[in-house]
Length: 389
Image 1 (cartoon, rainbow, N blue to C red):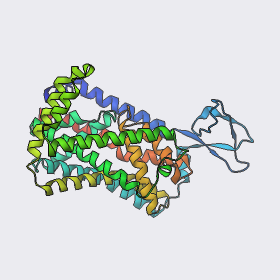
Image 2: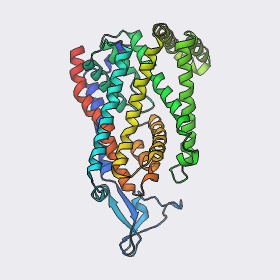
Image 3: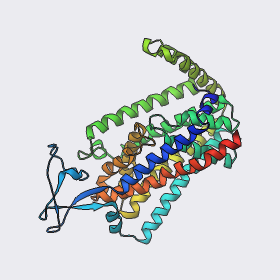
Image 4: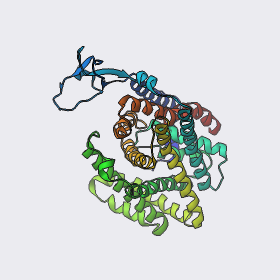
């Protein structure tokens, strides 16, 4: 496992500004691409000016592929941009109310993260310090591919806040376990109300592939949760023995030192955390639930602002978001950029026939839940590093 000194060197001088610049550039390009996107929609009789031609011979009408639509005064399709879709939105006092609720959910997500980090540090971190930790943690996650996340950076940040390396490791491991536990508990709950064919409709992009990714990811997270729970609460030496056994495989021997170090840290974490009372873990898990529920309710509130949704619609929307979150986690792009916006429209097409409305809402969603952390982090990080130098 990387030590703080190694991580710290990656935050010195030009490296930090290069990372910030790349992150902001990627975010800006993705935002520009989303805003300037053009799609085609079926036109009312006599109002179309384009016809569809299956140029790639896949027998599928891709409304976002401009190469497949040919200008024709008698066509049955017409162009529509994001700005067109936004002008067609019927704004009401209810719309503004639900957008405000969505913003409150964004704030609630970070509040519960701050509460959790204070609980895990036994309130050694002040609210101000917790704010810095969470914002910089989110900033690191936004700049990292979904499959990487900001784990190493989180340990560095906590260590700089005078939490020793062993406890920093413990806190990061506990947050990972709690996040995964919430996810694996939510999946069975969702399937009490909706079936697989509804969650993965045939018209969704690569429906069968998405199902494979979803269930593979679910069982990976379930396995990680069981592994961490067993190591932290039942058999503290389990992780070290298990990882030691795994690295005996020839092509994994190069990671033997890191694996054994990780196992040792997990064992130390277990001895630290097993002293905590049961009510302590209940509080930590409730804070985790609060942060994730707030995260999901952002999209629920945004769609409610422009669409009429019932209780079952909101539960279905929750299930769709579980799929969306998993796709973002396996994305190779920073913060899931590109994948998140595309998957948003494809997975939520059941809620609106307007692809451009969904594309517009995807932009609003990312403006609320992703881009702010890039700008906040870029502003806070240099100040924080100077104070902790």
